[in-house]
Image (cartoon, rainbow, N blue to C red; front, side, top):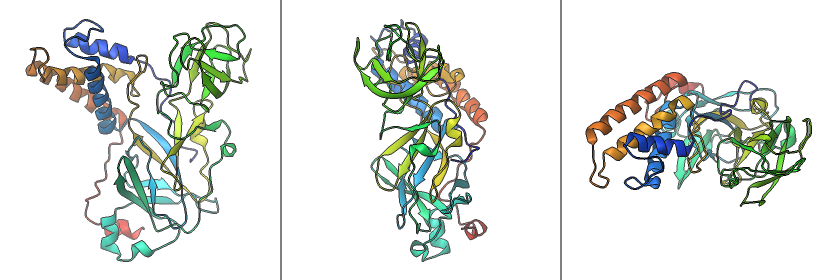
Length: 377
């Protein structure tokens, strides 16, 4: 990826899922963690609906992707959590096959190309544009124009320092923080809360950092110590002790990632950095394209998980969930007027989120052809 791109996730903080649930219950006049009238499942469902709505409408979460191209292949898988390209017109750079530059790829559509040329599907050469392609089940595709004539080089972990590659299709989640529980000078991290770290989205290949002694390393195994998947095996380096002592604070970089997609498979891989900012210097292999995209937030599913949006908007997720719940009957209670007031607070939060983001330019695929625009393709 180009050197000017940066990651945007950082260390998450604010309200955990449990705290959000209690906030919704409080707004509904209920006691904390009391799910008699309103079930925990439905509260969580509406909190996640609010989180997705906020991500889509504000375009506030972004990350980077590299797509490995293949000669003669038009369509490629978009990342699972893809919402839209960040740039509405020049959506992606193409790293030329000689590795000497990044020509910009302009966004177009099948309709635009059909209106300009009846033979564009037969044209081959270095890509000049791309367009949103068909959807197969849950898989969204992007098409390139013209058809590539050269295979893109594959990405290997040793191309960039400070980067590791995960396995395919991990559960996208937030950065995970914790404290080491047991054992002095230990080669293993044991989570003091006994959490299932795999359920939090942690996979082999991610970086764990001992923030107390400054050491870090790539996770080589996840196993059981005193609970299921509460133990991490890692070879630490670069710190004072390069081990774990009771009370050491750690962070697992599960929320800092770039996406790697390929013509060869419908799965995707993830690029993780060993420290913040490294992904901004990832080099795109020759003959491939890179882009920054607006993405969905990770689904809230664990008690200690933070929403992947700025903490100042966490309270507002509660307004949305409470508003919807008040609009439907629950054990004889319904209050649409109060729900409408809550929803106005939610809409005000979305407006603030859009202002914070500052790049809310869409690009409808149904626009009429732009002759000057297509001429650039």
